[in-house]
Length: 200
Image 1 (cartoon, rainbow, N blue to C red):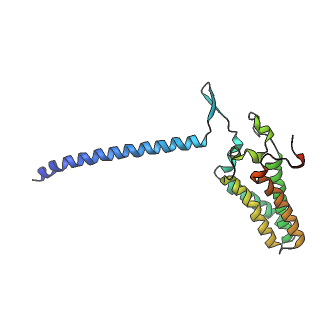
Image 2 (tube, rainbow, N blue to C red; image 1 turned 180 degrees about the vertical axis):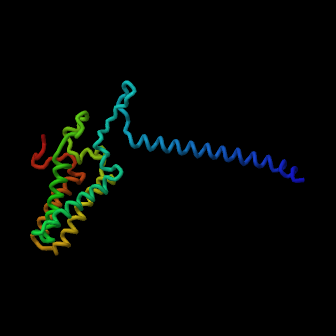
Image 3 (spheres, rainbow, N blue to C red; image 1 turned 30 degrees about the horizontal axis):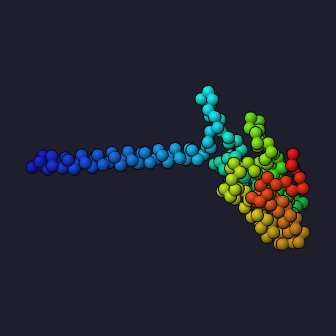
């Protein structure tokens, strides 16, 4: 009797095993297709394949700011700069926040909006006429990396304004340096050189 029940349930088990295999194959195909799509999104259209090496139109600078751990490193570096100024005994809190904002703005302006070209020597095609900011994410606007790098100086301005108790002098200095770093990040200034500064 027990053997007969096993034999009767056997076709059902075969069908469920086949169904499991088919559904497993479908899931595997979906996962494979998703991975291929993710890889193709991360790498642009290859321009040429020579000797088994794919040459791409993307320079490494286009994506390193969005890489893993870069945002937290940037925030830690900014906080370390603030702690350095805070450790100087002859500076009060208002001066520390203003110095942090000014130094951060000057460094970011120099690194992102003044230096042109690629930091890798083999990638000097059209990049040599673009600032580092214009090269981030292949020039795409409103990416998460660009939003993050735009929001940080604004948040620093609000913090500096709060900790300086909205004193007019500090507010004006922090506001000017925040504008100096935020305005070039706007899409309307992509490729624009005001007063021909940094044109060549």
